[in-house]
Length: 213
Image (cartoon, rainbow, N blue to C red; front, side, top):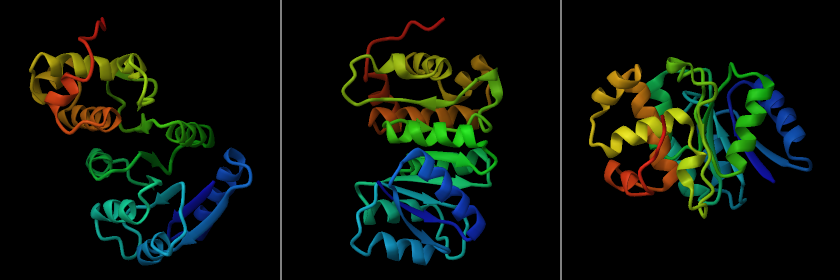
C-alpha cells in the first residue's frame, strides 16, 4: 500500500501517517506540505493507492485540484481530510471525484472506519455534516458486482432514492424527509458516485424500486 499525504501541518501529517500504519501494515508514504508539491509527487511516476489531501493548503487551486490529482493518479482513491465541515465543501469534493470526505475533527475510530470503508470500495460522507434526521452513520458501500446495490445504502439514502424515482425535486425531498436541500444534494452526489451514474435518471434506473418504510 502506497499512500500520499498532502497537508501543510507537519504534526497532522505525522499523526495521520501513524494512524494509517495501524490500518495498513507495511504501508509506504509520500508527503507534501503544499499543493504544488503534492501534485508534483503525484506526477513523478510513483503509483499510489491512496491520496489524502487537505483543502485550502498553500497553492490550493480550488476543487479542480481533486480532478488534477486523479488525472495524475488514476488508480488511486483521492480523499479529502479537512477541518471544514461545510455542506458545500463536501458536495464539491464528491462532485469533483473524491472517494470520501473526512473531517479533521473525527475521532481515531471514525477515521479508521472511514478509511477502511473507502479501501473496500465505498464512499464516506461524514455524519457530522449530515446530522439531520439523526442518521447514525452517513456512508455508502457499493461493491460494483453486487446485484442488491440498494441494500448497501443507508436507510436515509434509500428514502432519498425512493423519492427521486417518484420524480420529486430536491426541495420536495428535503421537505418530506425534514432535511435541508444541501443535505439532499450531498446524499444525491454520494449515491451517483457509488452507482457510477451521472444523473437522476440513471440512478433511478440502476435497480428496482426500493421498499423502505
